[in-house]
Length: 335
Image (cartoon, rainbow, N blue to C red; front, top):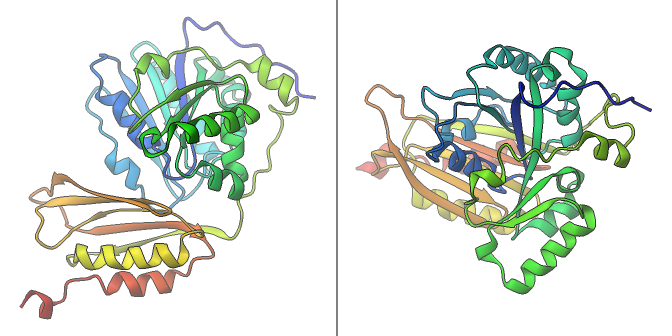
């Protein structure tokens, strides 16, 4: 059994909030809401993505008061955990000037190995305290996510604060059933209903909710070595294209793909250089729910490139590349 480590007091350590949740639940939206609030705090932001490139990192707003660190093509709970320790060790040098750290995990992260990082590395636990695990759940897809992914179950069970997001897309009766389901997995977490991850920052940041003793009572081996392996059938890939995309053609194609492969298509997202638009188009899709919005204008010297990330189970990259290629605007189309 792992013993409880000696931990320095709260007052002099930087609070770290870990935001987790299954693919497409609204983690990046929550991070952006926190960063946009007029709280005057200096925050460091760590974003982890499962895929080869970071779409979410490109969508996180930050300024000179904030530092953004991105980890791609790996998971904080396993392959890039050492990078997290190194980054936290560097951030502890800013203990006098930093008000907090926000960590957004990949949607496929097991929370326990991430949490144990704050207690097994001496240089980290001396200067940084784990303040809370905040899990964002997708009210529309929660049952499907829990049924298909052990990580989704672990994220709910491990959390200190749970946001039942997209509450506006389900009925009151469904919300009650969702909350009852969550309570079976985690009777102690604080629950909040949210729409577009809108919530008072005081309810998710610096709340002092993480209780190490309680976690050890539930799982005595929590601080031990973790051998976390992702489902080998779940993978991701990125498709890139410098030529403009016909966004209407893309929407029709993605609708057909979702109808055919909906159960296996966990998450797609992208930033597109679309024909007829001077702005970046941001595409987000979770199973059958899709959104498309205009983002900031392309910069004058910025390369206009479409980047499309696909995450799912038993997906054929070549098949998606062929379909995405049909959405490219050809010279004959523009004529």
